[in-house]
Length: 403
Ligand code: 1OR
Ligand code: 1OR
Image (cartoon, rainbow, N blue to C red; front, side, top):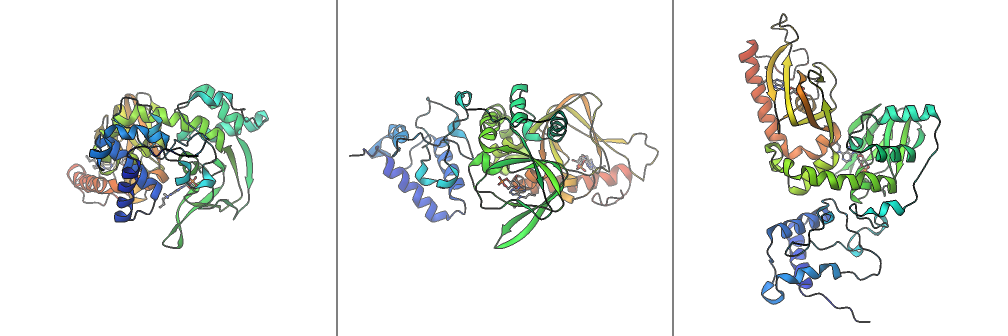
């Protein structure tokens, strides 16, 4: 049997290999995604195009040495957009370049193939369904789903009791389920330089286990129960059919907006798209409290539309009724970072002025994804401290919880 090697393939792979050898990336798949995304964006052929011509890369879908359908999802998901007008297409990552154990299924979030798949249904009592709905009501990944998608998710979820010290997830394993916490506390451990470090906790709320399912990667952290607890599991196939498909839509909707955000300018395109994957949108009515001063913090906010009023009660001005207005945030601006960065209660309150829509991210995603944006945030926090002196005539440290 003879296999035709598409024109340009050797040069393409050679260029990529040289970059890998030069840069020695830790995460090869992520590096490949970034590399080929940039290559496509640049719309030019950097390797030996005088021989192969720019049209050569059209043939990349032929890099299929097997009869099975190709895996096209990736951390960046750009392949999900079928853009035939491109000069050349981003090469499809074939199954020989990926971890075999985690890419058994082929899935294109934009195809309607899910309707032929059998639905997973775990029957539940009314009481279980009520508890499940309560546990899911603040799950950010579920915020942008329509009613039918939500029904299907709830049908597919199953209850799991966990015992203290139980490993719900082990770093490096393949991803089987996504988990929503009904109750219990859980530690997050990550292997950093060969040492297991506790990098965070879940306290009776939230969810985990989405990354391995979204990106076909090994589990990125170990999750251990620190109390007896209860979780709701969602199988990988249903998660991908509903959430990953919805994320492809979210990326298209929000790509332009996240590109325009000054806060995210230190992130690569792929990293910005991961931000889109994990945020949920929340809508607030006029006057609604989004953040209350003194509360424990677990989310970060970016205003998509409307205006947010920030107010502060300060012991230097105890008579200011309901707090003094200290700032306003509008489209593209962020708030709620201070408590997460300084690990302290909310320093101020935030209220909707008219109808407001925010992109909301949980603290774990904030820490995992927004590290490169920390300089901008810290500069802003230093600014708050200066303003504090002007407004309240005090040089009190804003990170002091007694303020
Ligand atoms: P997963 O499918 O990879 C482990 O399985 C889960 O732990 C992961 O999805 C997330 O849902 C959750 N880095 C990676 N995964 C994390 C992190 C995290 N936190 C929670 N998970 N970091 C900690 C941020 C507080 C970054 C550590 C360097
Ligand atoms: P947070 O997590 O503490 C309240 O929740 C948020 O209000 C806070 O993060 C900031 O994102 C936002 N001082 C403190 N927080 C402020 C301020 C501010 N402005 C907005 N926030 N100052 C206003 C400076 C123009 C200084 C205080 C007088």
